[in-house]
Amino acid sequence: MAGLRLGPLLRYVDWESGCTATVWVEASRPCTVEVRCADGASGASPTFSVAGHHYALVTVEGLTPGSTTAYEVLIGSRRVWPPEDTRLPPSTITTPPVATPAGPGKGAAESAGASSDGVRISFGSCRWAAAPGGGHDPVGPDALVTLATRLAADPAAERPDVLLLLGDQVYADETSAATRRRLAARRDLKEPPGAEIADYEEYTYLYDESWRDPEVRWLLSTVPSCMIFDDHDVIDDWNTSAAWQRDIRATPWWHERIVSGLMSYWVHQHLGNLSPAELAADPVYAAVRASPDGTEALRRFAAETDADPARTRWSYRRVFGRVRLVMVDTRAARVLAEDRRAMLDPEEADWLREAVLDDPASYDHLLIGSSLPWLLPPLVHDAERWNAALCAGVRGGRWARFGEKVRRAGDLEHWAAFPKSFDRFAELLREAASGPDAPATVCVLSGDVHHAYITEPRWPDDPPADGSASATASAPSAGGTPASRVLQLTCSPVHNSVPRWIRAGFRFGWSRTGRRIGRFLSRHGRTGASPVTWDRAGGPWFGNQLMTLTLLGRKSALTLVQATEGKQGAQLEAVLKRSLTPED
Image (cartoon, rainbow, N blue to C red; front, side, top):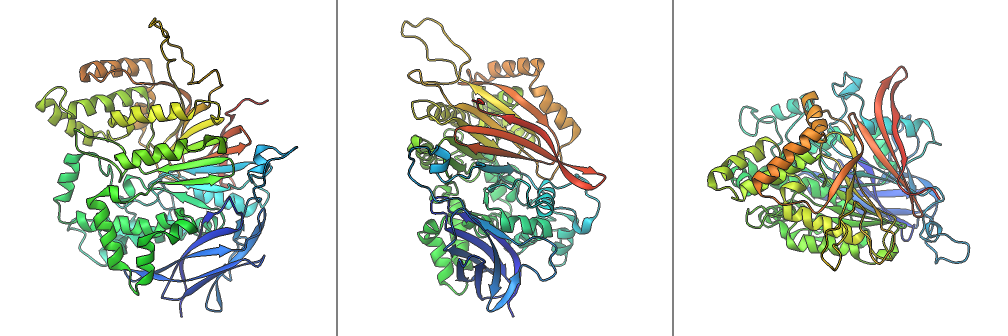
């Protein structure tokens, strides 16, 4: 008899029709999975098989726009979700109101399908699975578990409309004691890759551990989620450089690791990012579903993608009323050759430009999800840009070899380590924030660095026609039209830690002394001036945390909460509440 092994996860909710959603599950054996809603909406799908595991992504149709409805999952005629003994509320699907043409008395938020409370988008990255069985947690309360507990206990609490998980959803290179015991039961951990993940089956252990926690399982069943990988989903500093890639590919265990990592990401995370129409047009999804065992078709896809990353696009675009989200792959899409080094390959960069600039009048807020921060503390930024120049040979071969060692030792592989890509991204943001149809805000959402902070970039004005020197700290504008407010909002970790000495290093990176050291490195590396300058507008904050944007019309507000241990157990403490747009 088939049962529910993992899930359900509520993934895609259609904000344009308000009547369609997708629900991801893993079953214990081949079967047909049905999702049945209290309002009469439903959907069913047969499972597809990968490496002895059985999955379904069920498209639920007929939902009522602007409603919240409970749902259950059935296999055959047997209900498998919610569990009979659950103490948690019913899992629900919430849909936005149907978009209607703007008319007299209707604001942009109403006409675009946003609720009167706006669109709430919570985000963060870097999550170790919670300590099992309520045991001691060395890194403190899990922000995701704490959020789930609060929402389950208080039906009136503000609930995110969508949860953005910006990378390191699982840690293939830092396994828990429980996972290491499972690994040791099937192979010798003295052989490479040791206590790290080796193959697809072992990747399933990570998702079991991360998504089976009862509170997190319920949260992901009732709050839609968008995901993108970062390095630890595969390995620390994945795709740092061409030299790093050559070295890792020479190891006997790497091929199976990268193929399995991409396969498991495709199954567990990527599919749920796609709309039903995108799924219907996906040839890999069709091939895997058409086969009694889709393992080889998916292995072939993953191996070909590793050999030629440009053949696959992991980036995607989503719309939430008058809010546009563009989620960017900053890992697999890299060009690593030193003479062509880029964060995004040319086709990916063109796609990003079109996704950002297409029809700007259709959105009031632009969100760009990048697992890696674009703007770092100035010293760290200058060090990465200096290091990139050394590795490119600006100071000769000896310095280049030294630079590669420093790059790997210091994890110098953010946007600043790809200087041309950094500059092009800065120009893209400037363009998106300018003109008569500019949105109210342009926000880069990021994680990775195990703390939270806010930065605000500034572009110098274009020089006057007479060539005289003129530069101000104003944001970009065009034709006298007020520009968007451009911000980077960095939030990490959801559940992890950072050593005290690294905390001190991040703080020092913002200091005057740190900036002076950065300027010295820039001169040594002959890097030239950055096209933008930036200030820290908030933080740094350290702890297990989540940020939430509330977007209503052209207004935007930001909240940062941290999971803390109190007398009544773990709770979410508000650290920051701030309006990002004028309160008029």
